[in-house]
Image (cartoon, rainbow, N blue to C red; front, top):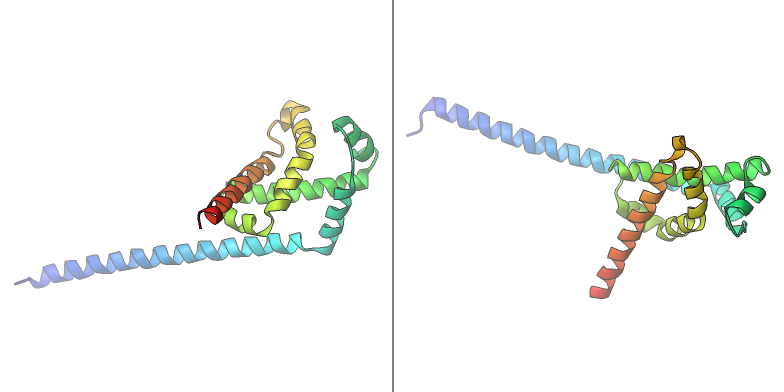
Amino acid sequence: MIQIEYLALILTGIGIIVSILYYASVLRNQNKTRQAQLFMQIYEKWYDPTFSRNTAELRSWEWEDVEEFDRKYGPDVNPEGYSKFLSYIRFFQGVGVLLQQGLIDVSLVGEMMPATVISAYQRYELILRDHRSRNQETRRLWEPVEYLYNEVLKYEEQQVKKENSI
């Protein structure tokens, strides 16, 4: 027969295990809630009318190379346009940082705006790389944008593979 003192130890152990499992469940739910809140903040910015107008304007810009981009849209000649460009790229920078830090899942971004992330990076890649190479202090500039692009690209490829295997 089980002695009373062993029963107390067993019940205490079971209580601790149940507490740990409950706490893990609460943490998992909090993480999902935090990701949903961050996603909604991204979503709100993404569909903000001013952001949409600025994005449409940026899509109308035309240039052949970095030098022409700077002549037409650089901070010295077109400060208002350049600030719109920075705001646009910084949006992706912020999303990239959240993704790098594991605060949001790539599927959230991959489902909401895959084509835009991919096309924006491809459109501005030379400009971003040029900014990065101009001096030593900016050598890591825009890395989260590139990270976001690469991760969304991988996500898209996985989705295509899934669709083709069905």
